[in-house]
Length: 327
Image 1 (cartoon, rainbow, N blue to C red):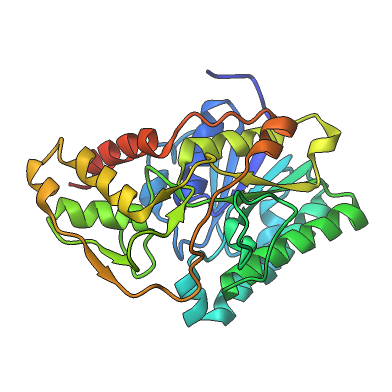
Image 2: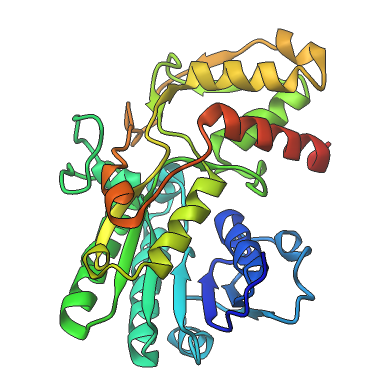
């Protein structure tokens, strides 16, 4: 439903999976949306449905360049900071670039947002921050030691955001994403996320490789739940709800074996042969957390969060999207 809202949102990493979905959502609500992206992991095709929208503006730039950040935040009301180099394995292979983007780039965006006097800075944090903490479900104020360079960078983001809130009065909210999946998530590349990668392999009748015995579990979170959290975080008028961190998840966990079983079932409705594709098992992956499950009690209480999509609900939507868009 369109509103007459003329607030302007800057979405960094807006050509990426989560960022492009956020762009589309807020354009549909009547906001002016600026996308800042260097297209290192984002894609122009993620913007095709709204690139000509008069309320949309694309800035090709890099958060590692403070001038690009300062330019992008001019006359901006809210920043939804999604730009980052994701992937635990990538960070293990190249910790320097991961740190440059995720820490130095993040600090650049905080400084630019502070100087431009944006109303609020909402940023993508990560469930990897829980590290070696073994307790389940994960609650926001109990974390362990990070298990990868990527996890370190995302924890540093939280520390910087807290300092900017306390020292400069910049309103910040961090959203610890738990294994987000859905439409527009890239199935290609060395660091592709597990769900789109498995979908593409199954559609080609190729055997997916599960790292370990398949009993590691995750709180898989559909993109529409993440969009809801971003909107709530950006618009909340509850002063107690800002300058803090929230788990962004569904609040349930499924094993990788569960996941593949659902994928085969839902894809077999399009191609019955997929039901017979074998699954291959390999070694556990360095830096992986064995089990992940979020408590979403804090988000429910402070923001009124009410996630609509379970893993199964989200997978049905995602599988249909991949089948119709990537066959």
